[in-house]
Image (cartoon, rainbow, N blue to C red; front, side, top):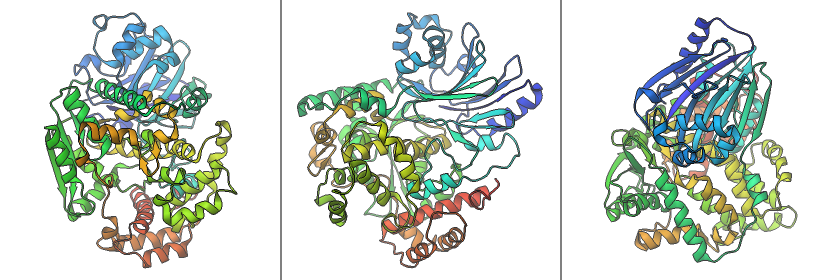
Length: 612
């Protein structure tokens, strides 16, 4: 796993200033790739590329980047892993021995020359973001993987396009001011994260997952998708098949997804939470594939939230080496600073703190870590999916409102209302404008008619997964120079899940019945947790206790900012009523606290008035 940056100019530039900018940008990315750094400037002095490498496959200098194709037509800087590189070699009728290296980077370049860019992307199975220069057409292609596992940002200004794996590298390219985006701020307080293509800065954008952004030498741009959930939905109808058939297909796809993610020349481990998904990944590795394995988890002093003992029990059942880092309250509070300093944008998910800690723990034993991330989105694990099916018991506190709204609203409107009430800062989402989500949901018209559950899953695949879950896993792992791989997010599993009938994902009160049954079959019902917190933290205790002075400052500061989509009086009521056990209020106030922490770190003030 790696980091990269670069700049494309409209007119030729002196080489020395171009290279100086590239080095400044790359200095911000060394945590993503501490093993080497590389630079390249094209002969016409239009483009400069910078690269920081975390060596995973082919540890030799021959696999360093930037890398050129055999003909010299293509040059690439690439962050990611292609898991089916051997299959791609066979597709272009090449033997692995015919390559200079055994890196997937060289295979990608050969496929671009033989097949073309988009056919290669359609055939590739992996996680990636890359910048590809085509010297023949003088075009730069910025590309992200299907689901957005790897990040890529860009800014087009001052007769140049600047791009980088992380925003901090873009901001080091020059000293020009960057205005905070009002739309992104509104989206943050509605979703608790900032969705692509927005970033917190007006002039910085994210390449969207599954998209290609082509930039010509004159800086004209064109962006289009090569893969999308919409296309999957249009191409594949949900099929009612027997539970047994669905179970066996899911098991086979998951095992292959785990197997192909073992490609590595460095040690591989598993982040084991004790839940269904990460436990199944560990089982596939240790028992089905007979891999000697280390697993890692975080423990908490809070007995209600601590899941370390469940993870220990799974590790004993599988016979794997297991390491636990138990965080005291003071340890966790100190980690808040470390985790938040990694983030370039406001990010309201407090589970980033234990994710940072477990990646730091694992770095001493493994450079590649497999996780259970994506299992809830793919196989129907979230409680909100129960609401999407109208199951009364799971949503007793909301069900009456659900029944009232259902006859008057379409399925898509019900799903949006669920999302707004669950995500938005304020009591039941009442203090933030619904404008952003409503504008975003205009794209629902492109979809076939869906159920409420399917709209909720679609929202998660388009918003929550790429811009919360995958941002958290990428930034926290890369901050510790480790690579996370998510077998459940293999695109074949994703497409398979969208072919399933809804009752294969939520059956009565049971979420993700397929993976739960696989767990019971292979690991045992005695290990099935009744409830899982997912790296939860005692943030109510923190915010009502040692962080209370900072929280009060944050609420006062945010409440006085012009242009924010929040009700200042409601924020202050929430603060005055905060209790350590009130997790929902604490979570919403954490989102405000995280915005304030980000603004303080980046010395920003308010949307459309701020200079960074």
